[in-house]
Image 1: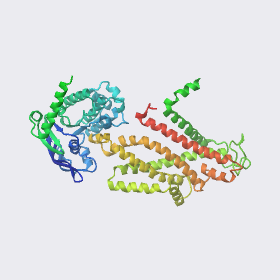
Image 2: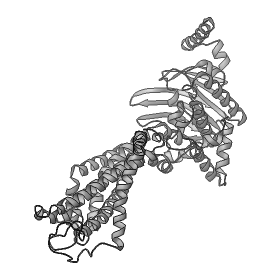
Image 3: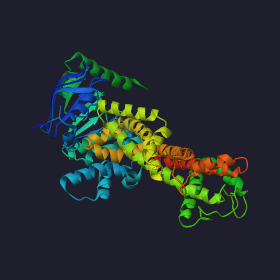
Image 4: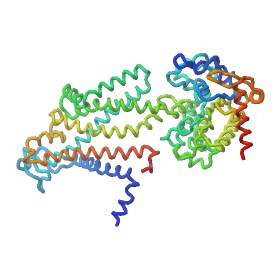
Length: 265
Length: 282
């Protein structure tokens, strides 16, 4: 059974379609990339997958999360699935963390929720520090006591990843997780995600506008343009032999960018 | 030299300066109010001097037109004002925050209906609503507090709705929801702490408004009867003798203003503490 199965998903605001007739499936352990420019509907697809479309947008078609239909389901019934099946890491870690809450409390929240659900008792303090260690934060005790504005952007994104891991999801949705970071931090966050997904045997839905970044971390990609999937396939094939004109342009642009970097003094 | 050095560092600690000034002003009123529970200079109802005496060592603020000690009445006024302010804000906050958060979460239709109801209630002057409620019951301290609490709740509800709606659109709410947080836990863990700094300052404003409104009610003869009489009642009593005993008109006013300013300074200081991102910032 697939973890996430989207069939003929259409997202519209009023009569205007933002995503049309998109289908995709993610099996346990599978890594899928969703590529497209701003406004191509990739982030909306991620939100629709967990039933969190902003007010005013409506979804049609079918989204199944671990076998449970999401489209048209009451919110209270989805709360159990969120986190447990899929957890999300967002683009901007500063706004994705509550500014008035210490890092420890933000990570403790999903930990406690999971413990309640499973009926276990846990040592919250220790598990928070363990999780911070897992996402390769030096001085986990100090960071746990800090507020989000007191730590660096890279550390914040690691904290956001730790929050997602605290849910122990089967599927990790990463929505442009490196876009707000500088280049060296980007590389280390990508490495971290790659390692965690492998170690914890999670599935990954990786969303980005950046073809080279996606290619390093996923097996298959879907290229979105104006809400429609224009190309899909194994990442190596799409990169070397793109079929659709839009994908060819994307790949050519990435090549030109690389060539430009090499020519630079 | 010491004074100079302290002046020099003062600008860097402006936040704590307002907090301390607020603590001192409110603290005086709180201490006086507590003191009146066990001791007052004179029995507030006893005729202890001549009529309309001026200030003296025996009667610090003179006596009223019946010969009762005026300073004793001012001290008891502190207690009444604190009870009115705290009680009215507590009732207003309980109703207002609940309705405001409810409206922020409600469907479009319910939200619009609640917002319209708040606006209509706010359109009525606080004092008018309070007078209606008092007229419907009887003039007592309890009915004044209830009346003012109801009158304040609309303002608090509208503010709560607006700030809660703004917080609801922020990314960390979505992030918490994607992690499986339920709406009640989001309200308690994220919404209330994030709207609290704004609300706390507003509660202080409302406290001041409640104290002043209660004084107005008493001035109009709709407040609690003696010996629970407030500064407003004293002002009304002093009206006829303002030329012969001016201190009776000034003293309750000074007491009222010092309490309202003190509470506002205190709220400013508390907001800076409630918001860690402002801590240590000038």
